[in-house]
Image (cartoon, rainbow, N blue to C red; front, side, top):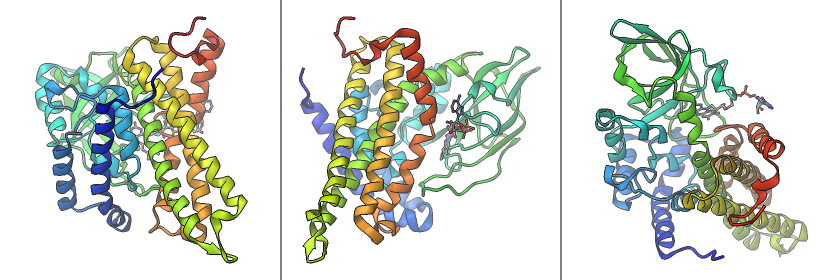
Length: 391
Ligand SMILES: Cc1cc2nc3c(=O)[nH]c(=O)nc-3n(C[C@H](O)[C@H](O)[C@H](O)COP(=O)(O)OP(=O)(O)OC[C@H]3O[C@@H](n4cnc5c(N)ncnc54)[C@H](O)[C@@H]3O)c2cc1C
């Protein structure tokens, strides 16, 4: 076993850290104004292109950075340090767009990779959350294509995106299918834009689709493939969440450690009090063990030798463990900062609010537990094995 980062991984980590450090200047403004002006978006876009970290999940021949899953995790860990979800400004097109036909690729994917357009992914509905198979949005066959009707909620970056990847039940057989829908298409309406607990550089609006007409070439990845395509990327998406939450927790601990060493009460630095030391130590343990496991699973995905079902369960374990552990870390760090930890101008306060959603989206903690338990009961405890282990 060799746990060292390769020179390439170390360079990517440093590059991502430089980008995160540059973007940090926009955090306070984002928090204050619930978003950023066009000029800031443009300057970050230029910085992302300069860093070479655009579309890290897309092949180099299409203009992406073409990173392995482990390399992506290393990058996401650094970007996860940013508050205001500024990490989302470093665009990673939806993996589903890999299923574009050559024509769709030119129109949708390539401009997203170049940073000229943005996509958003609309699966969730008022009545379909953890159970996306119950989507009520329909695509009905009409003479020259399809008519889409329905409602989608929580569409991250729906305010900023140019087009929406919409999951709908198509035809009489209600085949789950993804459609590429331009946001400007007649019948697409952005309705409510709720305020959420976190401050996020983009919004998560609700959309209605009323008699929206698309042609056959709007279908992404084939009729009836929508659910399978969405599911097939859960492993990667969940590992990226694990990586980002670890990066966030690490930043919180760094600042809480520095604060504890410098802040004096009762004539001594608070870091000398054992109750504070206990919190610092527990944070370090939560971060270290979760980083090691996330890297292990990302490495297994990169190696390609572990079977898909096992990887799916392992990614669920990484997401569940890292998002919950990071939540504990920021909670303790807020405590170490005392009243200042409750002040929005302190990054720990923002991270405290922002990490909460990582236990909800891309499958709630309960859904991750169901996946892990399902694997254990149906296939045994092999999911615990290290690659190469017998049995
Ligand atoms: C900020 C934000 C951004 C989002 N971005 C997007 C996006 O871009 N695109 C998109 O499509 N969706 C997005 N989502 C939606 C997100 O994926 C869903 O909120 C999530 O999947 C949970 O669905 P739900 O909210 O309907 O909760 P529900 O499914 O109603 O769950 C409510 C509670 O019941 C529990 N529960 C449900 N089923 C079970 C079960 N079988 N066993 C045990 N417990 C269960 C859940 O764990 C949860 O605790 C976003 C959500 C948020 C908050």
